[in-house]
Length: 293
Image (cartoon, rainbow, N blue to C red; front, side, top):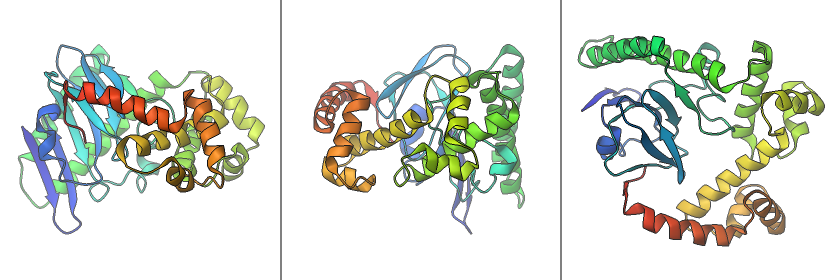
């Protein structure tokens, strides 16, 4: 079942699907959606994000944005999805309130998977029931109430993500630097490709950033920048008809050879070979998948 709210004045949209894998075709007409996916079943489910399989165990959540392509295995157990556009709730505008950008949305690290502990499951299920109740209550403050609930949901997930996905060795100020770095890379990776560029924007030295990320994970700031560039190149190769030369220029490379060198360094293959092999895999996989969005 799909519950929806439409704010006609600003084209605001917020939807709750109880079985997103089967109901998603009804949502694809909406553009620019951000999703929170929650496996409420008692079975593991596989979600493909940009052709990468993500296994969601029972009571695990993940997120996706309008930049990513999502597909599901046929027969996937019901996965609930909260889907909204920026006209309904802009996570950039409200970043100071929820601090989710760079952690659960638009991050440069791996796709986030958040696990609900036993003491959290009841709280999330209660919040879910309140969402359903509010979606079915039509009055002039419904949109405001749903925004408040969505904000609460995002904050709760972000808090869990900080404890589960970020090392406890980092204090809150250090976590905030990591988060802001991720957001800046997501915003500027096409034009800024050096760690010093981001260090300047964060008023830190490149060495400080490198030391901080050495504590955070095994990836250096430069590796994160490079991987974000290559991720975008992969998306373009998989989902558009653009040539490697066109993609290179779009990603800010003056020389196509520099783009080829970086792509091969990250993927161990040339762009055209990646496109050929990925599409061959996708052709076979599509027979087992529910449609992409």
